[in-house]
Amino acid sequence: MKLIEKIKGLRGILYRKLIEEEELRFPKFEIKKQQVKAKLPDVKQIRKLNVTYSLIEPFAFANIKWDEDTKDLVYFVIEPSLNEKEREILEKISSGLIEIMEVGLSSFKDISKALEHLEKNVKKIIKDFGIKLNPAQYLKMMYYIYRNFIGYDEIEPLLQDPFIEDISCDGTNTPIYIVHRKYGSLKTNIIFKDEKRLRDFIVKLAERCGRYVSYAEPILAGTLPDGSRVSATLAPDVATRGPVFTIRKFTERPFSPTEQIELKTASPEILAYLWYLIENKASMLIIGGTATGKTSFLNTLCTFILPEAKIVSIEDTRELKIPHEHWVPGLARVGFGIPKPTGEKYGEVSLFDLLKESFRQNPDYVIVGEVRGREAYVMFQGMSSGHPSLSTFHAGSVDSVIKRLTTPPIELSPTLLESLDLIIVMIHAKEKGKSARRIKEIVEIESVDPKTFEVKTNVVFRWNPAFDKYEKINESSKVKKIALLKGADLEKELSEIKRRERFLNWLLENGVKDYDEVAKFIVAYYKEPEKVEEMMKERVKVEYKPKEIERKTFLEMLGYKVIREEHA
Image (cartoon, rainbow, N blue to C red):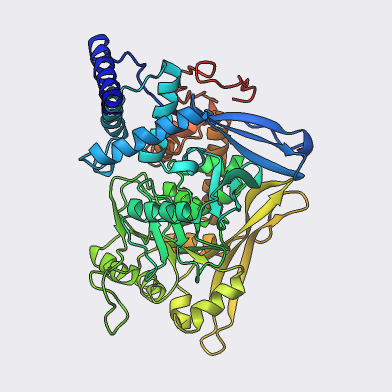
Protein backbone atom coordinates (compact mmCIF):
# COMPACT_ATOMS: atom_id res chain seq x y z
CA MET A 1 0.00 0.00 0.00
CA LYS A 2 2.83 2.35 0.91
CA LEU A 3 4.56 1.51 -2.39
CA ILE A 4 1.41 2.42 -4.34
CA GLU A 5 1.15 5.74 -2.46
CA LYS A 6 4.82 6.49 -3.21
CA ILE A 7 4.28 5.73 -6.90
CA LYS A 8 1.25 8.04 -6.95
CA GLY A 9 3.22 10.77 -5.18
CA LEU A 10 6.13 10.36 -7.60
CA ARG A 11 3.76 10.53 -10.54
CA GLY A 12 2.35 13.80 -9.17
CA ILE A 13 5.86 15.26 -8.73
CA LEU A 14 6.83 14.28 -12.30
CA TYR A 15 3.60 15.74 -13.67
CA ARG A 16 4.11 19.02 -11.77
CA LYS A 17 7.66 19.22 -13.07
CA LEU A 18 6.42 18.68 -16.61
CA ILE A 19 3.87 21.48 -16.17
CA GLU A 20 6.53 23.81 -14.72
CA GLU A 21 8.75 23.16 -17.72
CA GLU A 22 5.98 23.71 -20.26
CA GLU A 23 4.43 26.57 -18.22
CA LEU A 24 0.69 26.98 -17.75
CA ARG A 25 -0.47 28.26 -21.10
CA PHE A 26 -4.00 29.23 -20.17
CA PRO A 27 -5.87 32.14 -21.79
CA LYS A 28 -6.07 35.32 -19.70
CA PHE A 29 -9.35 35.47 -17.80
CA GLU A 30 -11.29 38.65 -18.58
CA ILE A 31 -14.84 39.69 -17.88
CA LYS A 32 -16.85 42.29 -19.71
CA LYS A 33 -19.74 43.74 -17.78
CA GLN A 34 -22.48 45.25 -19.89
CA GLN A 35 -21.63 48.89 -20.62
CA VAL A 36 -24.25 49.63 -23.28
CA LYS A 37 -27.83 48.69 -22.46
CA ALA A 38 -29.39 46.14 -24.77
CA LYS A 39 -32.48 47.31 -26.67
CA LEU A 40 -35.31 45.15 -25.41
CA PRO A 41 -38.60 44.66 -27.26
CA ASP A 42 -41.90 45.83 -25.82
CA VAL A 43 -44.37 43.25 -24.54
CA LYS A 44 -46.94 42.72 -27.28
CA GLN A 45 -47.77 39.06 -26.74
CA ILE A 46 -46.32 37.94 -23.42
CA ARG A 47 -46.42 34.23 -24.35
CA LYS A 48 -44.23 34.85 -27.41
CA LEU A 49 -41.60 36.93 -25.61
CA ASN A 50 -38.13 35.36 -25.74
CA VAL A 51 -35.27 37.80 -25.32
CA THR A 52 -31.61 37.17 -24.46
CA TYR A 53 -28.87 39.66 -23.57
CA SER A 54 -25.42 39.50 -21.99
CA LEU A 55 -24.70 40.21 -18.32
CA ILE A 56 -21.06 39.16 -17.79
CA GLU A 57 -19.71 38.53 -21.26
CA PRO A 58 -18.95 35.88 -22.40
CA PHE A 59 -20.01 33.81 -19.39
CA ALA A 60 -23.43 34.87 -18.10
CA PHE A 61 -26.58 35.78 -20.01
CA ALA A 62 -30.19 36.63 -19.20
CA ASN A 63 -32.98 34.86 -21.04
CA ILE A 64 -36.51 36.16 -20.40
CA LYS A 65 -39.23 33.94 -21.80
CA TRP A 66 -42.64 32.45 -21.14
CA ASP A 67 -42.56 29.23 -19.13
CA GLU A 68 -45.35 26.91 -20.27
CA ASP A 69 -45.04 24.75 -17.13
CA THR A 70 -45.59 27.55 -14.60
CA LYS A 71 -47.52 29.87 -16.97
CA ASP A 72 -45.23 32.74 -15.98
CA LEU A 73 -42.74 35.06 -17.60
CA VAL A 74 -39.45 33.83 -16.10
CA TYR A 75 -35.97 35.35 -15.95
CA PHE A 76 -33.41 32.59 -16.60
CA VAL A 77 -29.74 33.15 -15.74
CA ILE A 78 -27.60 31.17 -18.20
CA GLU A 79 -24.10 30.25 -16.96
CA PRO A 80 -21.45 27.73 -18.12
CA SER A 81 -22.48 24.16 -17.25
CA LEU A 82 -20.18 22.00 -15.10
CA ASN A 83 -20.04 18.21 -15.10
CA GLU A 84 -19.41 16.19 -11.91
CA LYS A 85 -15.63 16.09 -12.39
CA GLU A 86 -15.46 19.85 -13.05
CA ARG A 87 -17.49 20.52 -9.88
CA GLU A 88 -14.98 18.47 -7.87
CA ILE A 89 -12.07 20.42 -9.38
CA LEU A 90 -13.82 23.73 -8.62
CA GLU A 91 -14.35 22.64 -5.01
CA LYS A 92 -10.69 21.63 -4.70
CA ILE A 93 -9.44 24.96 -6.13
CA SER A 94 -11.87 26.94 -3.92
CA SER A 95 -10.73 25.10 -0.76
CA GLY A 96 -7.10 25.69 -1.73
CA LEU A 97 -7.71 29.42 -2.22
CA ILE A 98 -9.24 29.76 1.25
CA GLU A 99 -6.13 28.14 2.75
CA ILE A 100 -3.36 29.93 0.83
CA MET A 101 -4.64 33.48 0.30
CA GLU A 102 -3.03 35.71 2.91
CA VAL A 103 -4.47 38.99 1.62
CA GLY A 104 -8.26 39.38 1.67
CA LEU A 105 -9.79 40.37 -1.66
CA SER A 106 -11.77 43.14 0.06
CA SER A 107 -8.48 45.00 0.61
CA PHE A 108 -8.22 45.57 -3.16
CA LYS A 109 -9.96 48.75 -4.29
CA ASP A 110 -9.43 47.91 -7.96
CA ILE A 111 -11.33 44.82 -9.18
CA SER A 112 -8.72 44.14 -11.89
CA LYS A 113 -5.98 43.92 -9.22
CA ALA A 114 -8.12 41.56 -7.12
CA LEU A 115 -8.75 39.43 -10.20
CA GLU A 116 -5.03 39.35 -11.02
CA HIS A 117 -4.22 38.26 -7.45
CA LEU A 118 -6.93 35.59 -7.60
CA GLU A 119 -5.80 34.20 -10.96
CA LYS A 120 -2.19 34.02 -9.78
CA ASN A 121 -3.25 31.87 -6.79
CA VAL A 122 -5.53 29.69 -8.92
CA LYS A 123 -2.64 28.87 -11.27
CA LYS A 124 -0.47 28.04 -8.25
CA ILE A 125 -3.09 25.59 -6.95
CA ILE A 126 -3.51 23.99 -10.39
CA LYS A 127 0.26 23.53 -10.57
CA ASP A 128 0.59 22.18 -7.01
CA PHE A 129 -2.26 19.67 -7.37
CA GLY A 130 -1.31 18.69 -10.91
CA ILE A 131 -4.81 19.48 -12.18
CA LYS A 132 -5.25 19.02 -15.91
CA LEU A 133 -7.57 21.53 -17.60
CA ASN A 134 -8.11 22.57 -21.19
CA PRO A 135 -8.48 26.34 -21.94
CA ALA A 136 -12.30 26.22 -21.96
CA GLN A 137 -12.41 24.40 -18.59
CA TYR A 138 -9.91 26.86 -17.11
CA LEU A 139 -12.06 29.84 -18.14
CA LYS A 140 -15.14 28.17 -16.64
CA MET A 141 -13.30 27.57 -13.35
CA MET A 142 -12.09 31.18 -13.29
CA TYR A 143 -15.61 32.50 -13.91
CA TYR A 144 -17.07 30.60 -10.95
CA ILE A 145 -14.13 31.52 -8.72
CA TYR A 146 -14.52 35.19 -9.68
CA ARG A 147 -18.28 34.93 -9.07
CA ASN A 148 -17.92 33.34 -5.63
CA PHE A 149 -14.84 35.14 -4.30
CA ILE A 150 -15.06 38.65 -5.78
CA GLY A 151 -18.73 38.72 -6.76
CA TYR A 152 -21.92 37.82 -4.93
CA ASP A 153 -22.23 34.10 -5.67
CA GLU A 154 -25.42 33.01 -7.47
CA ILE A 155 -26.86 36.53 -7.69
CA GLU A 156 -23.75 38.16 -9.23
CA PRO A 157 -25.26 38.08 -12.76
CA LEU A 158 -28.42 39.75 -11.41
CA LEU A 159 -26.37 42.55 -9.87
CA GLN A 160 -24.71 43.14 -13.24
CA ASP A 161 -28.03 43.53 -15.08
CA PRO A 162 -28.68 47.27 -15.60
CA PHE A 163 -32.40 46.56 -16.11
CA ILE A 164 -32.88 45.09 -12.62
CA GLU A 165 -34.04 47.39 -9.82
CA ASP A 166 -34.74 45.02 -6.91
CA ILE A 167 -33.62 41.49 -5.99
CA SER A 168 -35.67 39.61 -3.37
CA CYS A 169 -35.13 36.27 -1.66
CA ASP A 170 -38.10 35.14 0.46
CA GLY A 171 -36.42 32.13 2.07
CA THR A 172 -35.11 28.67 1.21
CA ASN A 173 -36.58 26.60 -1.63
CA THR A 174 -38.26 29.73 -3.03
CA PRO A 175 -37.24 31.31 -6.35
CA ILE A 176 -35.53 34.68 -6.17
CA TYR A 177 -37.69 37.43 -7.64
CA ILE A 178 -36.51 40.56 -9.41
CA VAL A 179 -38.10 43.83 -10.51
CA HIS A 180 -37.18 44.46 -14.15
CA ARG A 181 -37.36 48.00 -15.55
CA LYS A 182 -38.92 46.75 -18.77
CA TYR A 183 -40.96 43.71 -17.73
CA GLY A 184 -41.86 44.31 -14.07
CA SER A 185 -41.78 41.60 -11.38
CA LEU A 186 -40.24 38.34 -12.62
CA LYS A 187 -39.43 34.97 -11.06
CA THR A 188 -35.88 33.72 -11.68
CA ASN A 189 -34.39 30.23 -11.92
CA ILE A 190 -32.12 30.93 -8.90
CA ILE A 191 -33.09 29.13 -5.67
CA PHE A 192 -31.22 28.78 -2.36
CA LYS A 193 -32.04 25.18 -1.43
CA ASP A 194 -29.82 24.93 1.65
CA GLU A 195 -30.57 27.14 4.69
CA LYS A 196 -26.94 27.16 5.87
CA ARG A 197 -25.85 28.28 2.41
CA LEU A 198 -28.36 31.15 2.54
CA ARG A 199 -27.28 32.14 6.08
CA ASP A 200 -23.64 32.20 4.98
CA PHE A 201 -24.58 34.39 2.02
CA ILE A 202 -26.35 36.93 4.28
CA VAL A 203 -23.25 37.01 6.52
CA LYS A 204 -21.23 37.71 3.36
CA LEU A 205 -23.59 40.58 2.48
CA ALA A 206 -23.13 41.99 5.99
CA GLU A 207 -19.33 41.82 5.66
CA ARG A 208 -19.47 43.62 2.30
CA CYS A 209 -21.65 46.30 3.93
CA GLY A 210 -19.17 46.67 6.79
CA ARG A 211 -21.87 45.55 9.24
CA TYR A 212 -22.37 42.71 11.70
CA VAL A 213 -25.31 40.28 11.71
CA SER A 214 -25.94 37.33 14.05
CA TYR A 215 -28.73 35.52 15.89
CA ALA A 216 -28.44 38.14 18.66
CA GLU A 217 -28.69 41.00 16.10
CA PRO A 218 -30.53 39.31 13.21
CA ILE A 219 -31.59 42.38 11.20
CA LEU A 220 -29.21 43.84 8.63
CA ALA A 221 -29.62 47.25 6.99
CA GLY A 222 -26.61 48.42 5.03
CA THR A 223 -25.09 49.57 1.77
CA LEU A 224 -22.90 47.54 -0.56
CA PRO A 225 -19.71 49.13 -1.94
CA ASP A 226 -21.52 50.00 -5.19
CA GLY A 227 -24.24 51.89 -3.26
CA SER A 228 -26.96 49.20 -3.46
CA ARG A 229 -29.16 49.03 -0.35
CA VAL A 230 -29.40 45.74 1.53
CA SER A 231 -32.09 44.67 3.96
CA ALA A 232 -31.87 41.16 5.45
CA THR A 233 -33.08 39.02 8.35
CA LEU A 234 -31.01 36.09 9.56
CA ALA A 235 -32.78 34.34 12.46
CA PRO A 236 -35.49 31.71 11.70
CA ASP A 237 -37.64 32.86 14.64
CA VAL A 238 -37.80 36.35 13.09
CA ALA A 239 -38.18 35.23 9.45
CA THR A 240 -40.19 32.01 9.67
CA ARG A 241 -39.51 30.83 6.09
CA GLY A 242 -35.78 31.03 6.66
CA PRO A 243 -33.27 33.85 6.14
CA VAL A 244 -34.47 36.55 3.72
CA PHE A 245 -32.86 39.48 1.94
CA THR A 246 -33.74 42.31 -0.44
CA ILE A 247 -31.27 44.33 -2.48
CA ARG A 248 -32.34 47.68 -3.94
CA LYS A 249 -29.83 48.24 -6.71
CA PHE A 250 -27.96 51.51 -6.93
CA THR A 251 -28.14 53.25 -10.30
CA GLU A 252 -24.54 54.14 -11.03
CA ARG A 253 -25.59 56.67 -13.63
CA PRO A 254 -28.58 58.77 -12.49
CA PHE A 255 -31.46 59.58 -14.80
CA SER A 256 -31.02 62.84 -16.68
CA PRO A 257 -33.92 65.26 -17.31
CA THR A 258 -34.13 64.12 -20.95
CA GLU A 259 -34.28 60.45 -19.88
CA GLN A 260 -37.10 61.27 -17.46
CA ILE A 261 -38.98 62.88 -20.37
CA GLU A 262 -38.34 59.84 -22.57
CA LEU A 263 -39.56 57.52 -19.80
CA LYS A 264 -42.64 59.77 -19.39
CA THR A 265 -41.86 60.24 -15.70
CA ALA A 266 -42.24 63.97 -16.39
CA SER A 267 -42.97 66.25 -19.34
CA PRO A 268 -40.67 69.00 -20.71
CA GLU A 269 -43.20 71.58 -19.47
CA ILE A 270 -43.10 70.17 -15.92
CA LEU A 271 -39.29 70.01 -15.79
CA ALA A 272 -38.94 73.56 -17.18
CA TYR A 273 -41.34 74.79 -14.48
CA LEU A 274 -39.45 72.93 -11.72
CA TRP A 275 -36.11 74.20 -13.09
CA TYR A 276 -37.35 77.80 -12.86
CA LEU A 277 -38.54 77.30 -9.26
CA ILE A 278 -35.28 75.61 -8.18
CA GLU A 279 -33.22 78.46 -9.65
CA ASN A 280 -35.38 80.85 -7.63
CA LYS A 281 -34.74 78.89 -4.42
CA ALA A 282 -38.04 77.10 -3.93
CA SER A 283 -38.18 74.27 -1.37
CA MET A 284 -39.70 70.98 -2.53
CA LEU A 285 -40.77 67.65 -1.11
CA ILE A 286 -41.03 64.60 -3.39
CA ILE A 287 -43.48 62.10 -1.89
CA GLY A 288 -44.68 58.62 -2.85
CA GLY A 289 -44.72 54.99 -1.81
CA THR A 290 -41.87 52.47 -1.95
CA ALA A 291 -40.06 52.20 -5.31
CA THR A 292 -41.92 55.10 -6.93
CA GLY A 293 -38.69 56.75 -8.10
CA LYS A 294 -38.53 59.51 -5.47
CA THR A 295 -34.74 59.51 -5.02
CA SER A 296 -34.11 59.11 -8.76
CA PHE A 297 -36.27 62.16 -9.48
CA LEU A 298 -34.57 64.11 -6.68
CA ASN A 299 -31.22 63.35 -8.30
CA THR A 300 -32.59 64.57 -11.65
CA LEU A 301 -33.75 67.87 -10.14
CA CYS A 302 -30.26 68.49 -8.72
CA THR A 303 -28.96 69.10 -12.28
CA PHE A 304 -31.03 72.32 -12.33
CA ILE A 305 -29.25 73.89 -9.33
CA LEU A 306 -27.05 76.88 -10.18
CA PRO A 307 -23.53 75.62 -11.08
CA GLU A 308 -21.75 77.88 -8.56
CA ALA A 309 -24.13 77.11 -5.67
CA LYS A 310 -22.90 75.42 -2.50
CA ILE A 311 -24.83 72.18 -1.95
CA VAL A 312 -24.86 70.06 1.20
CA SER A 313 -26.47 66.63 0.88
CA ILE A 314 -27.40 64.34 3.76
CA GLU A 315 -28.28 60.65 3.43
CA ASP A 316 -28.34 57.49 5.51
CA THR A 317 -27.31 55.42 2.46
CA ARG A 318 -25.32 56.97 -0.39
CA GLU A 319 -27.61 57.32 -3.42
CA LEU A 320 -27.23 60.87 -4.68
CA LYS A 321 -24.75 61.80 -7.38
CA ILE A 322 -24.74 65.57 -7.90
CA PRO A 323 -22.76 67.00 -10.85
CA HIS A 324 -21.55 70.11 -8.99
CA GLU A 325 -18.02 70.86 -7.79
CA HIS A 326 -19.23 72.83 -4.76
CA TRP A 327 -20.97 69.82 -3.22
CA VAL A 328 -20.48 68.54 0.34
CA PRO A 329 -21.96 65.03 0.70
CA GLY A 330 -22.81 63.85 4.23
CA LEU A 331 -23.56 60.28 5.28
CA ALA A 332 -25.14 59.08 8.53
CA ARG A 333 -23.20 56.49 10.54
CA VAL A 334 -24.55 53.57 12.55
CA GLY A 335 -23.14 53.25 16.07
CA PHE A 336 -21.89 50.17 17.89
CA GLY A 337 -22.21 48.38 21.21
CA ILE A 338 -24.97 48.63 23.82
CA PRO A 339 -27.31 51.62 23.29
CA LYS A 340 -27.06 54.61 25.65
CA PRO A 341 -30.07 55.56 27.86
CA THR A 342 -31.11 57.93 25.02
CA GLY A 343 -31.38 54.96 22.65
CA GLU A 344 -28.40 56.01 20.54
CA LYS A 345 -25.33 53.82 20.15
CA TYR A 346 -21.74 54.94 20.67
CA GLY A 347 -20.25 56.60 17.61
CA GLU A 348 -23.64 57.06 15.96
CA VAL A 349 -24.07 60.08 13.67
CA SER A 350 -27.73 60.52 12.75
CA LEU A 351 -29.45 62.52 9.99
CA PHE A 352 -30.57 64.90 12.75
CA ASP A 353 -26.93 65.55 13.78
CA LEU A 354 -25.79 66.04 10.18
CA LEU A 355 -28.67 68.35 9.34
CA LYS A 356 -28.01 70.60 12.35
CA GLU A 357 -24.35 70.83 11.35
CA SER A 358 -25.13 71.44 7.66
CA PHE A 359 -26.89 74.76 8.28
CA ARG A 360 -23.78 76.05 10.05
CA GLN A 361 -21.92 75.62 6.74
CA ASN A 362 -24.15 78.28 5.12
CA PRO A 363 -25.27 76.19 2.13
CA ASP A 364 -27.20 77.60 -0.83
CA TYR A 365 -29.16 74.34 -1.07
CA VAL A 366 -29.69 71.44 1.33
CA ILE A 367 -30.58 68.04 -0.14
CA VAL A 368 -31.86 65.36 2.26
CA GLY A 369 -32.17 61.84 0.82
CA GLU A 370 -35.26 61.07 2.92
CA VAL A 371 -36.81 62.67 5.99
CA ARG A 372 -38.62 60.41 8.44
CA GLY A 373 -38.52 61.83 11.95
CA ARG A 374 -37.24 64.71 14.01
CA GLU A 375 -34.71 65.76 11.34
CA ALA A 376 -37.72 67.13 9.39
CA TYR A 377 -38.15 69.82 12.07
CA VAL A 378 -34.55 70.99 11.57
CA MET A 379 -34.95 70.97 7.78
CA PHE A 380 -38.09 73.12 7.92
CA GLN A 381 -36.38 75.53 10.30
CA GLY A 382 -33.61 75.85 7.73
CA MET A 383 -36.15 76.48 4.97
CA SER A 384 -37.81 79.26 6.97
CA SER A 385 -34.42 80.90 7.56
CA GLY A 386 -33.68 81.11 3.82
CA HIS A 387 -31.97 77.79 3.03
CA PRO A 388 -33.94 76.11 0.22
CA SER A 389 -34.20 72.36 0.67
CA LEU A 390 -35.10 69.41 -1.54
CA SER A 391 -36.01 66.07 -0.01
CA THR A 392 -38.16 62.93 -0.28
CA PHE A 393 -40.84 61.71 2.12
CA HIS A 394 -42.68 58.39 2.33
CA ALA A 395 -46.38 59.24 1.90
CA GLY A 396 -49.10 58.50 -0.63
CA SER A 397 -50.90 61.84 -0.86
CA VAL A 398 -50.65 65.54 0.00
CA ASP A 399 -53.17 65.12 2.85
CA SER A 400 -51.22 62.26 4.43
CA VAL A 401 -47.90 64.14 4.27
CA ILE A 402 -49.48 67.25 5.86
CA LYS A 403 -50.95 65.12 8.68
CA ARG A 404 -47.62 63.40 9.33
CA LEU A 405 -45.72 66.68 9.34
CA THR A 406 -48.14 68.40 11.75
CA THR A 407 -48.55 65.53 14.25
CA PRO A 408 -46.02 63.86 16.62
CA PRO A 409 -43.18 63.04 16.41
CA ILE A 410 -42.48 65.83 13.85
CA GLU A 411 -45.24 68.29 14.89
CA LEU A 412 -44.44 71.29 12.68
CA SER A 413 -46.06 74.65 13.34
CA PRO A 414 -48.16 76.27 10.55
CA THR A 415 -45.47 78.94 10.12
CA LEU A 416 -42.79 76.34 9.44
CA LEU A 417 -45.05 74.34 7.13
CA GLU A 418 -45.63 77.45 5.00
CA SER A 419 -41.91 77.52 4.17
CA LEU A 420 -42.51 74.49 1.91
CA ASP A 421 -43.32 75.68 -1.61
CA LEU A 422 -44.14 72.53 -3.49
CA ILE A 423 -45.08 68.85 -3.14
CA ILE A 424 -44.43 66.44 -6.03
CA VAL A 425 -46.50 63.24 -5.73
CA MET A 426 -45.05 60.17 -7.46
CA ILE A 427 -46.62 56.79 -8.16
CA HIS A 428 -45.54 53.39 -9.48
CA ALA A 429 -47.89 52.76 -12.38
CA LYS A 430 -48.26 49.59 -14.40
CA GLU A 431 -48.09 50.17 -18.13
CA LYS A 432 -48.90 47.11 -20.30
CA GLY A 433 -47.19 44.74 -17.89
CA LYS A 434 -44.07 46.83 -17.42
CA SER A 435 -42.88 49.03 -14.60
CA ALA A 436 -43.47 52.78 -15.00
CA ARG A 437 -43.04 55.82 -12.74
CA ARG A 438 -45.23 58.87 -13.11
CA ILE A 439 -45.70 62.21 -11.38
CA LYS A 440 -49.29 61.93 -10.17
CA GLU A 441 -49.60 65.63 -9.42
CA ILE A 442 -47.65 68.75 -8.50
CA VAL A 443 -49.20 70.78 -5.69
CA GLU A 444 -48.13 74.24 -4.48
CA ILE A 445 -48.56 75.16 -0.81
CA GLU A 446 -50.15 78.62 -0.70
CA SER A 447 -50.99 79.11 2.98
CA VAL A 448 -51.65 77.29 6.26
CA ASP A 449 -54.33 78.38 8.73
CA PRO A 450 -52.58 78.89 12.12
CA LYS A 451 -55.64 77.72 14.09
CA THR A 452 -57.15 74.88 12.08
CA PHE A 453 -53.95 73.77 10.27
CA GLU A 454 -56.02 73.77 7.08
CA VAL A 455 -53.70 73.98 4.07
CA LYS A 456 -54.66 75.97 1.00
CA THR A 457 -53.13 74.30 -2.05
CA ASN A 458 -52.92 74.86 -5.79
CA VAL A 459 -52.69 71.86 -8.14
CA VAL A 460 -50.56 72.96 -11.11
CA PHE A 461 -50.08 69.67 -13.03
CA ARG A 462 -51.83 66.31 -12.92
CA TRP A 463 -51.26 63.02 -14.75
CA ASN A 464 -54.14 61.65 -16.81
CA PRO A 465 -53.78 57.83 -16.71
CA ALA A 466 -56.36 57.27 -19.46
CA PHE A 467 -54.14 58.98 -22.06
CA ASP A 468 -50.81 58.79 -20.18
CA LYS A 469 -50.49 62.58 -20.54
CA TYR A 470 -49.75 65.45 -18.18
CA GLU A 471 -52.35 68.20 -17.97
CA LYS A 472 -51.94 71.72 -16.64
CA ILE A 473 -54.74 72.29 -14.13
CA ASN A 474 -54.02 75.81 -12.83
CA GLU A 475 -51.54 78.61 -13.35
CA SER A 476 -48.68 78.67 -10.85
CA SER A 477 -49.09 81.03 -7.91
CA LYS A 478 -45.39 80.54 -7.05
CA VAL A 479 -44.23 81.89 -10.42
CA LYS A 480 -46.42 84.98 -9.86
CA LYS A 481 -44.96 85.42 -6.38
CA ILE A 482 -41.36 85.11 -7.68
CA ALA A 483 -42.05 87.67 -10.44
CA LEU A 484 -43.50 90.05 -7.84
CA LEU A 485 -40.50 89.66 -5.49
CA LYS A 486 -38.04 90.19 -8.37
CA GLY A 487 -40.01 93.16 -9.69
CA ALA A 488 -40.10 91.38 -13.05
CA ASP A 489 -42.79 91.19 -15.69
CA LEU A 490 -44.82 87.98 -15.28
CA GLU A 491 -45.07 87.39 -19.04
CA LYS A 492 -41.29 87.62 -19.30
CA GLU A 493 -40.88 85.00 -16.54
CA LEU A 494 -43.39 82.69 -18.23
CA SER A 495 -41.59 83.07 -21.56
CA GLU A 496 -38.34 82.06 -19.80
CA ILE A 497 -40.02 78.83 -18.63
CA LYS A 498 -41.17 78.23 -22.23
CA ARG A 499 -37.62 78.78 -23.48
CA ARG A 500 -36.33 76.14 -21.03
CA GLU A 501 -39.01 73.76 -22.24
CA ARG A 502 -37.78 74.28 -25.83
CA PHE A 503 -34.20 73.75 -24.64
CA LEU A 504 -35.04 70.36 -23.05
CA ASN A 505 -36.89 69.28 -26.20
CA TRP A 506 -33.88 70.36 -28.28
CA LEU A 507 -31.55 68.20 -26.16
CA LEU A 508 -33.90 65.24 -26.55
CA GLU A 509 -34.09 65.72 -30.34
CA ASN A 510 -30.29 65.72 -30.46
CA GLY A 511 -30.04 62.49 -28.45
CA VAL A 512 -28.34 64.14 -25.45
CA LYS A 513 -29.42 61.81 -22.63
CA ASP A 514 -26.33 61.03 -20.56
CA TYR A 515 -26.62 62.57 -17.06
CA ASP A 516 -23.21 64.26 -17.09
CA GLU A 517 -23.64 65.51 -20.66
CA VAL A 518 -27.07 67.03 -19.93
CA ALA A 519 -25.62 68.65 -16.80
CA LYS A 520 -22.91 70.29 -18.95
CA PHE A 521 -25.53 71.71 -21.32
CA ILE A 522 -27.52 73.10 -18.37
CA VAL A 523 -24.34 74.82 -17.12
CA ALA A 524 -23.89 76.25 -20.64
CA TYR A 525 -27.50 77.49 -20.53
CA TYR A 526 -26.78 79.36 -17.29
CA LYS A 527 -23.44 80.79 -18.41
CA GLU A 528 -24.06 81.47 -22.12
CA PRO A 529 -27.84 81.66 -22.62
CA GLU A 530 -27.59 83.76 -25.81
CA LYS A 531 -25.27 81.25 -27.47
CA VAL A 532 -27.53 78.33 -26.54
CA GLU A 533 -30.58 80.27 -27.80
CA GLU A 534 -28.79 80.90 -31.08
CA MET A 535 -27.97 77.20 -31.45
CA MET A 536 -31.61 76.30 -30.84
CA LYS A 537 -32.87 78.87 -33.37
CA GLU A 538 -30.46 77.66 -36.04
CA ARG A 539 -31.33 74.06 -35.07
CA VAL A 540 -27.64 73.23 -34.71
CA LYS A 541 -27.09 69.50 -34.23
CA VAL A 542 -24.91 68.38 -31.34
CA GLU A 543 -23.19 65.02 -31.43
CA TYR A 544 -23.09 62.73 -28.45
CA LYS A 545 -22.53 59.02 -28.91
CA PRO A 546 -21.77 56.74 -25.94
CA LYS A 547 -18.67 54.63 -26.47
CA GLU A 548 -19.65 51.18 -27.61
CA ILE A 549 -17.73 48.25 -26.22
CA GLU A 550 -15.95 45.85 -28.54
CA ARG A 551 -17.74 42.52 -28.36
CA LYS A 552 -15.93 39.18 -28.40
CA THR A 553 -17.62 35.93 -27.58
CA PHE A 554 -16.18 32.57 -26.54
CA LEU A 555 -19.54 30.80 -26.24
CA GLU A 556 -18.56 27.77 -28.33
CA MET A 557 -15.30 27.45 -26.41
CA LEU A 558 -17.18 27.45 -23.10
CA GLY A 559 -19.62 24.78 -24.21
CA TYR A 560 -22.65 27.06 -24.64
CA LYS A 561 -25.40 26.53 -27.10
CA VAL A 562 -24.96 29.67 -29.22
CA ILE A 563 -27.78 32.19 -28.72
CA ARG A 564 -28.00 35.03 -31.22
CA GLU A 565 -28.50 38.41 -29.54
CA GLU A 566 -31.05 39.90 -31.89
CA HIS A 567 -31.89 42.75 -29.52
CA ALA A 568 -28.38 43.56 -28.21
